[in-house]
Length: 164
Figure 1: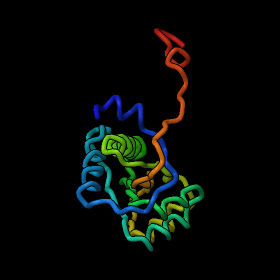
Figure 2: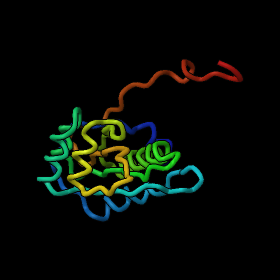
Figure 3: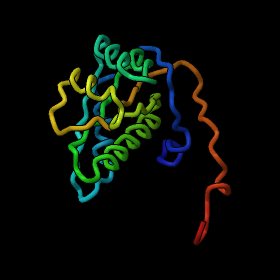
């Protein structure tokens, strides 16, 4: 699948069938994340991959809107050192992972991190070192339903030439 198609077909999936992911697939996703653009080439990211069912359930239980993480094949937690552009860098890495998941015919969903109260308890669950921030939790796995991206606003509604 080419990059533009993967971007157009990417959508959030909040139902997973619990099927395991291979370590190879998870490494490919993290590798896509580490190739994201980064301010001043700081590359402040670290990626924690969680596949153990008990830990997935604990993480899911801490979130406000991520209960489905418990049924995912895995959760990639994007963490960053608290640098000037950690949030932008971590979000770019997150988006790369989401697009790569679509290209690999996997389903995914971005769950917010950073300013959420549940980041501290999740950080403790994964032994996150001091000075690191959780930018996002990415549930990834399989779903038996047909993939249907949500409609997006038309290009003519959002595109402005030369000025707003």
